[in-house]
Length: 367
Image (cartoon, rainbow, N blue to C red; front, side, top):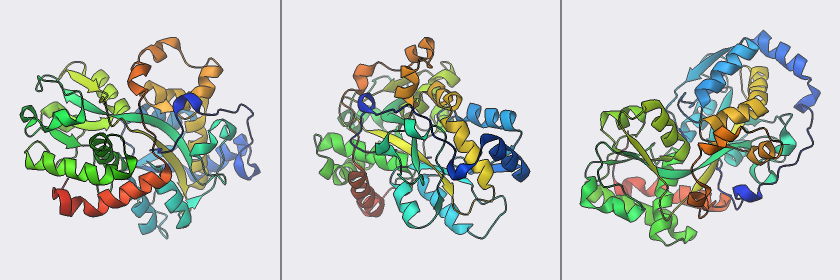
């Protein structure tokens, strides 16, 4: 599965405190009643081990008594958009109600008429830089790209992108998605290029393709989508993955195998994903209720438990809502100080280069 690329940095995110009412004048009681009448919610591309989503899905079902239909958990952002397009006239189980995609997909999906607006009750606490003013899409959480390393198999722990080209990493390095469709994978390529280009964002897309071509030529790149299963089995001992996924696996695997999560010394790319409701959602009220659940204090803290920084993080900290023991489990802030949040235009430019030239420059069919 699948960020936010803008000039916003976490320390400067503006978190206003005045709550607003639900969109379309709907009260919470009416929304719950209307959602229960629909009976279920259909989500897509939401792995249970991604960002604490398993607990969020289960708490939604328990709290509101609705079924949750979980489509294609390992899909990428592009697949989510295609699923909306393919099911415009379909009210059956293959039509997604909501999506969670990389930021670049939000504006383009709005432009294509694929999204329905909804402003959650906590709307004003979402920074303006990461939401559509009309409520068509809005940031949900962010993290940075790291190396998730199977330390039982990899004895020399890489500290930066250039290290990955070394002979110690034959048949070891994987992306966490198909770089022609997955936002996470696209940004993994971008981050490697940002390192190679010494911070020049304009050159990061092309340099990232060159880096992966060299990685592939050296026999270090594994053209398999890296995830917890392939990691534990040893098929993908190093995965370029969001920090929250690696840290989550560290907890889940409990030392079998041993997991190391390394924030690289350069090319540190941070990203935010965004939520949106399909304009053709078969269960539009269940979709709105899902959004209210995700952006509530409870939902935001659930993401943090999954090692994702929720978009309302500053607001929650200011209100004293985040448990101290939870804050202590997060990586030290110093590792994130050099994180780069590319602008939406920069992301779009990189995405164009990487998705269209991956086959010709790198030539590795990731699946």
